[in-house]
Length: 102
Image (cartoon, rainbow, N blue to C red; front, side, top):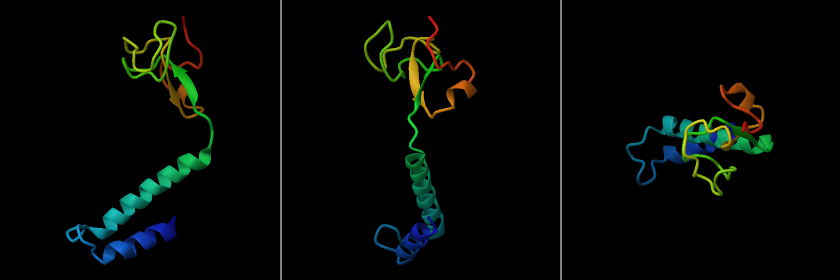
């Protein structure tokens, strides 16, 4: 990751068109941090889990027993609606359940 940040810094230090007013070290750090976050997510490789009961209305990931599509949950914290979260996260969230309550 350090190599990526160093390469990016060197490229931006040349002040390419459109980046003349850019704070190069800050931009390089932001891009490197974003790349590290993406790499960390991809490396983890674990399947997300369904977390029931924490979804904001209309933000659910998929069907429930009362509707057939994502985004159709009508109330916040619907115990039948779910979203994908990273494995091990659901049980840490107040109201989160790995199985629907019905």
